[in-house]
Length: 494
Ligand code: BES
Ligand code: MN
Ligand code: ZN
Image (cartoon, rainbow, N blue to C red):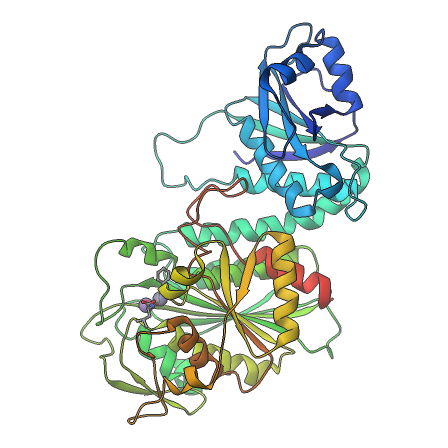
């Protein structure tokens, strides 16, 4: 059962669990103090015994507190309320729900930080609710036994700014739903989420007003997409390209475009991957999942923007029909590619997807997301996506928003030396660059298909899957990218 989330005025509940927040020094709000009085000072005594400082994330719980009808009182540290950012509030909401994981019934989070002048109390409350929603997400649809039972059914945020918080949450909820959609797609196994099934799920966005087209192999062949089609030719599953359009602004307004790598499973092809950990390659469509989640978010919150979402959906399999190392393919751009490693397939998919996007839509910019290289995980770990770009302004905007939202990016270098590394005597380029700078040579490859349109490539191999548990994410898939790009649009392109 998904958690139901609501807002109420700042009055103390009499049932269920209540979460009080305390600021630095273990200071309670006035309602917290009132509840402390009811319990005969049990809360302040516990604060002393626990040496509770109120630092962010610190907590303790009192069960069945005397002289109340409550199940429990949890005290949760906020740290310095004056410095509380929107992203902190989101984490706090997730942590708050985490403190009552085993509690049944209604949870009420008492929230009135009234601290930071840059973030309203309403936004703090709405962000806390979003954090709880993201924290609550589980992937248990294939468990016939041992599913999570019980636990909170209702999460109520109590705040003076109730009406404004509700309003702010309707928009943020759309974004969280988009993140959850992306997580669902990434967690889904590859026997279920084939390219046609993925396209079907993208089609479901039509009910939000998104225009969705699906290009077949025959149509892609006509368009000359030999690079993308080569990747899928060893699979029983047909390759597909999904074209989503959200038109929230005037017809004449140039769209912004998002392009996702959607390799529904990456065996490596004939350059096959080692067996250990290969199951993770069900998540090699994390870029396409993020783009789908983003389109959901933009449409569900009726963003005033024209946005295009393009998915290159393929399955990379070894087979009698599979492409071989050494094959030379012709991309839609006309440029030829010598495929020296069939496991460097993501760039082959994106080459045609990027070219198609700029040619058909003439976008203001293109941002692609792709679980493209293992090398980016070696360089940046799991907290930062690698950002490669030909545009300083976009790069700076994304860096700032990533830091504020907790979906961080780190800009990586591109230059001529890397570009030369993908030259080959046999064709216009090869699809691998050698041992060094693997993420940068991959990005140089993509750049050759951007036709100089302002462009950003986000290598999300480290951030989209195999994600460490955090206060707002508990499953293998994080849904990385949806919030980052939604907020980019919101801040600069609406
Ligand atoms: N999908 C992989 C990259 C990847 C690895 C994503 C681990 C997530 C976790 C990609 O298609 C790939 O195989 N890349 C190769 C490129 C190499 C052959 C040039 C890699 O990174 O090893
Ligand atoms: Mn690969
Ligand atoms: Zn791949």
